[in-house]
Figure 1 (cartoon, rainbow, N blue to C red):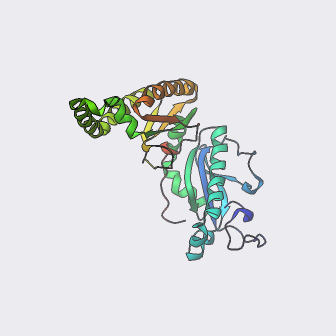
Figure 2 (figure 1 turned 180 degrees about the vertical axis):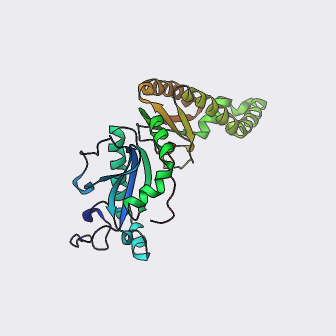
Figure 3 (figure 1 turned 90 degrees about the vertical axis):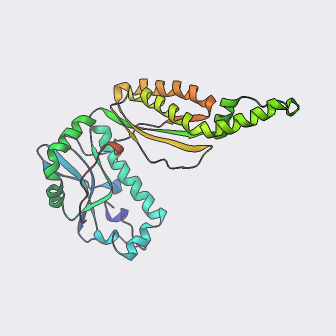
Length: 274
């Protein structure tokens, strides 16, 4: 990705190539006063800054188009052992920049032919980028996810089952179970609305993300990104902990993740070609 040692190649034991890069990997955009990270793995060097507007730079690393285009490259990148480390390296650069100051992260594997092409592509958006960096300063992104234990959610509405010998009470309980099962979605919507109001009081912005089930107990039902000022992070976490304690007996289990760069709150123009 950034150096010959980090580039995906058909034969990982082959010696590093020496050809000059014919593409540049875009990691993110920041102020020209933001220092480049120095606490990164050696294979991430050399990074470089290239101006894209007044006081703004793109953080770039050398790359090669052949590593990313064509059938052979696609076959290599389909292997998790190749793609995974590259994603990790990309995130390591963005994380380091974010620790030093506001950054607009670029999507993974955003390539341009040259630093000048980056400036030509992003330069017209420089005023918007500067305003976005101002907005992101002093903020972190948090992932808030929720999983539903449907059986517990139904039981919380109906209560314990009566003895089968109670006849009519048992039939009424079975009807109540069916009604509760149909009402789970409506209850979840009301819980989500209340939770949204709780977290929005501590956040500058929120995003509802696609729900992806990464495994675990219950059904994945909530996936939100929260943009929170750092001086409000403790209050946000306390509010989520309080909400979690209230929602858990009703079958909804929520969890707040660790602070991240603002991936969900940035949008860069997409280049038409690498």
